[in-house]
Each structure stands twice: as C-alpha cells, then as structure tokens.
Length: 550
Image (tube, rainbow, N blue to C red):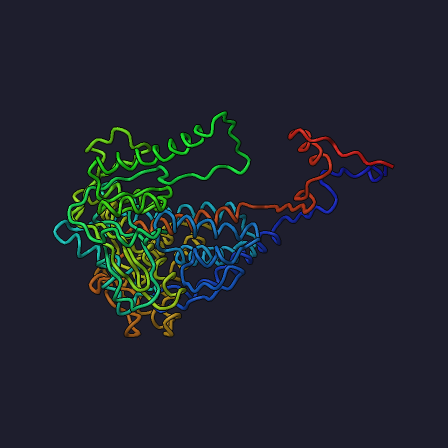
C-alpha cells in the first residue's frame, strides 16, 4: 500500500488545461469543420458572398482568405486553415476557398476512422500516399499552353478566375483582357508590385481602364500648382528623395550673434541653398519633377514660372513604378545631375477621373509596369473588385510561369477521384479504405459547385462518375448555367495546374498536421507576465525596481 501514499508530481502551473487522446483530436477536427462550413457556400461562380462587419467597417467578399482573416479565429488548431488559405493566396492568388473545402472534407472522412479506433499515423501515411499519386496523375494529364495561342489562353484562365467574383458577370471578358495585358507588360520576373491598381469611386465598371505605364492620384499641392503645365509631350522626368522647401526653425533653437547683419546673412544663406537646388534641377533639362518628400510653395511657383510640372509626397510604390517605366534613377542630391539619370516618356498628362485628378505617364520606352484604374459605385464593391483583380493577376502570372493548364468545374477532382478509386482496388489492408475515402473526399468540389448553384448534387455526381469512366470524359465537369455536365475544356473553363497542385498538397499537409496532434496544453496564466518578468524587464531598461513599503 506504500505506493498509494506517494505524493503526486506537479509539472504545470495551476489553471493549466490539458486535453489529450481521441476526444481532443475530434474537438480539433470539429473546430476546423466549423470554419469550413462558413466558407463552403462561397465556392464557384454561383457562390454566395459574406458580409463581415467589425470596428473597421463592413466588408463584402467571397474570397476564402479574406473571410478567414476577418473572422479573427482564436482556436489554435483552426488557425491551420487560416495559414493554408493565406499561403494559397500569397503563392497562387486563387483557390483559397478550394483548399479550405478540400481540407475540411479530408478531415470529415478521417474523423470516421478516428472514431472507429484507427491510429492517426495509419491515416497520415495513407493520405500522403494518395496525395503523391494524385499529384503525379495531375502532372501527367495537365495540358501545356500553345505558343501561338498564348494570349487567348491566358484570357480564358483570367476569365475563369473572375467567374466567381462580383465582377465576373458581363464584365468578365472586359477585365480578363485588361489583366492579361497588364501582366504581359512586365519583365521576366513578373513582379506584380509593378502592376498598380487604383480605385476611383463613382461611374460604372466599364469606365475602368488600363494605363500601359503609370498613373497615380494628384498629390497635395500649393497655389502655384494650377499654373503648371498639365500636358507634356516627350518630357524629361527626374525622381527625387529630397525636400524642396524652406524648413522652419525649431522652437528651442537659438543662435548667438554679435552683429544684426549676421542674422541677415543666415537668412540669405537659407534662401541661397533652396534656390541653388531649384536652379540645378532646371539646368538638368527636366520637365517633370517628382519627389518622395515635400515640395513647398516656393518651389511650386518657381517651377510653374518655368513651365515645369512638379509633385511632392508621391507614394514610394508609385515612384518605383515611374522609375521602371521611364528609366529615371532616384536622386538624393541635385548636384551634378547627368542626362542618364533622367527618365522620359511619350506623353504626360493630368486627367480628370471621376472626382479625382490623376497624373498619367504613357508611351514609356521602357514600359515594365502597368496601372489599372477601377471605377464603380459603392466603396465595398470597388474594394472587392480590387481583390478580385489581384486574384486574376496572380493566376495569369502563375500560368505564364508554369505553362500548364487544366479544366475547372470539378473536372480534375473527378478524374483524380476515379484514378485513386481504381488504385485502391489494387492494394489491401486499411490503406485501401483510407485512400478510397480520400478519393471520395475529392468529389466535394463538384458537389459543392452543384449545391451552390441550386442543383441536385447527387444527380450531377452520378452523371460525372459515369462520364469519367470513359477516356473522352476526362475533362467533364459541372455546367452551372444549364444544370448539367459539360466538357469544361471545350467551354474554356481553364485554370493553372499549379492551383490544384498547391491546393491538394496544402490541404493534405494541414490535415496530417491536425491528425498528428495528440495533446493540447493551454495555460492562461502563462500569457500574463509575472512579477519576476516585470522586474527583469525594468532592470534591463535601466529602471529602478519598485519597492513596496510597509
């Protein structure tokens, strides 16, 4: 009986909550499924939108990454879905809802095996084998982009990305062409930071336009600005990172002088410095002066008298794109300006766009940038249009880099599902059942597309299963317009193979991560700094420790 009297060993602080075993694993899965159920209705061209209201305002979106970001999820396991959605958005741009729905369905089918007592590691091994087979099959059947129809195929891919967006209706082709032209204007790196998207409230969507160059909103200006030229042909452009204004003396500044004339010499020196800067700029031959810092009223009027346009406090990203388009080199001094640091373009003009005025540089000889100006009614609608265009730009960029496409509409998921079902019949053991369940889980994409469009998903899936057993039925998917199935390759529902490759890989890895967790430890007290930590911090920063007097 002596062993019963041994004291218990306490490893964790009071208040620490620990949960382990099958119940906590099922709890983590249920938390993830609750997140997936929120976003699953946004999938596809007939998906619904979500209105999310917080202290920053209201947001209307059907983008999976945007929704889970705004939900501010606290559950540690459910944050895995947030991570894979953000990863998909940053790496690919589209397919954020797809990756979450796939991950949720993989968890749903694995939940049944967990409840039946199957060890999580057996499920993980089978899932990773299924993932490997699916990605290999996807690589085999992906179609390379033909060089002669390169632009047309990119337009189709951009149109597919815009199908499920707010602007994917009658404006789909209008914006798809705009997006493709913007991406093709970039250099080999395809850095999308050089594709600017500007929002102007008011007007209709078809008033949006693409600038093959740079456009940015008119910056803060002084009175002399209106006397400056608003249109210049073949201007010389200089970009600066210096202030061109007289600086006021500091409040506590003091200068000791013996003679009042010395004060006048100090004032004249200040004026001489600013005038020397302005003279050097004029002598360089520049017609357009852009600065990251302020250009004061004196400089504004000085340039206006000499028919030179100037703009101060230009945003850094806009200056960066101006330099890329015109060949200008950023200057931190105006001494010894050489002609090779000046940029040039065919036409500069200030144009009225709605209630805003925009400075536009076009016909640039080294055009490696573009700007899309979006018009629209409501602020939320224009903001969602910007997010939609970002997704389409990323899709086109990925297509250009990888040169492989597949058919959408659930066709590729059905093809991979049939392939994995056939493979599962060639093996035995528990892996056969798990890989077969993985294959069935892939059908969630065409099923959800059908349900979101209001169709009978059982009827649609039965037709697709029958069609995909034949060789010519490889690219048949859901026809959301006619409540039937169709060859989505022929109907130009195309998307980059990289989207599905990344979605399947990310969803599988997220599920394997959740299944590998066998214990969750949460200690609310550890989130609060204790007295020793506070004293150590005060000592580190040179503060005297607090002494409690009795």
